[in-house]
Image (cartoon, rainbow, N blue to C red; front, side, top):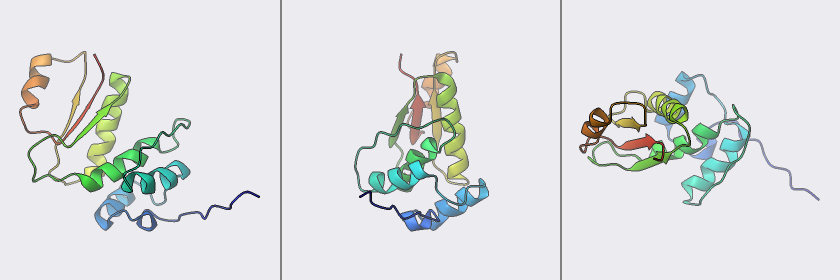
Length: 136
């Protein structure tokens, strides 16, 4: 017999803080997608998660929401590193993270090829809290 999983109706039910829930609402996101329902509690619990799902199913926010909850803008060092396979995905994730952060003082930097290396290197001088990039 297969266990019936209760549907979650809000990010608040997943123990996401009110500030992040409000930011999600401003982004037009009111309720979690299935991948988020499963990943967010596991990530809050400190477990590793591998999620595989089609494009548009909410994977990016599934890991960004718990990450945002742990970032501290008062600490002047990198607190999170996101590695992606492509420059385009790194840039897309950076855009979504900045939306999710809203007015937060947390600084996000996408470090990718195809852009001026010295300019990116200069931005790494202790000012970013989150780095998003590609290998190589």
